[in-house]
Length: 326
Image (cartoon, rainbow, N blue to C red):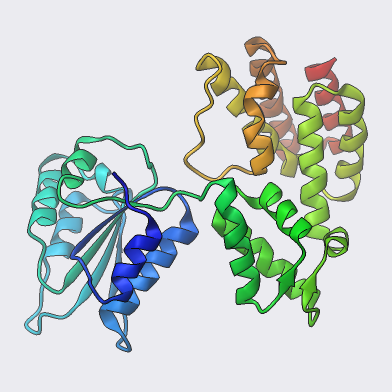
């Protein structure tokens, strides 16, 4: 069973450093926070000797050779190995052997974005190392993180602003932190962020209009979709910038249809807000699988035209809406 991140961090703060850690979950902010804390605990005021190992770019042999390399001074080293389950064959066995008997003064952090991964590697490692959850927190826990990000920047914030923040950026703490940082920088010397400030902040205004448009489209509201579509395509968006979130929306609805109504939360970042993602099963009920597949093919054709020939973005978007909802 995975242990909570805060429990693991308390152990690290007490300078109890394990030779192996196994992070499971896709939240980049939590991954980076844990790695940073371990680095500080291991090296203190000394320069951090950190090596990133990526199976997609390195051979299994190179990864194992890096892990086993030592010097005469038994120097401390920190290794971050992403997607360790991708190291296969004999080198995968070597990696498992290393996890059982790691080199002294070496600290290895294994990072697996798939919290539900049950590969042979995961099952083996979890026998002697409890995985640490770095999943994006549930909605009820996001409020404390939002307040923490504002406090870091010495700003207070109205509760309604936090609600909007969670709605728009709650897909990941990395996304939330980034938007809080931009909002605080934009506000200048102002000490309290208020709801009215969001309307003046162009980035938030653009995100909210996109969210409202996707909700109208998902609900099958033709008139509202056309009205909002015209507003965002002339003020804040281009057809190219909308293709990615539109494709993500219909792609997830297709997955729901193919899985007989079951929605599997995506492992990576999605360019649509948390509130829209949560309503995908509801949206999918209003579309046939044939209609969703048609929408995805149509978006592919639009993208090709936008990148290869001149075409009017507003006209493309309105025609798309009428084709899908008409």
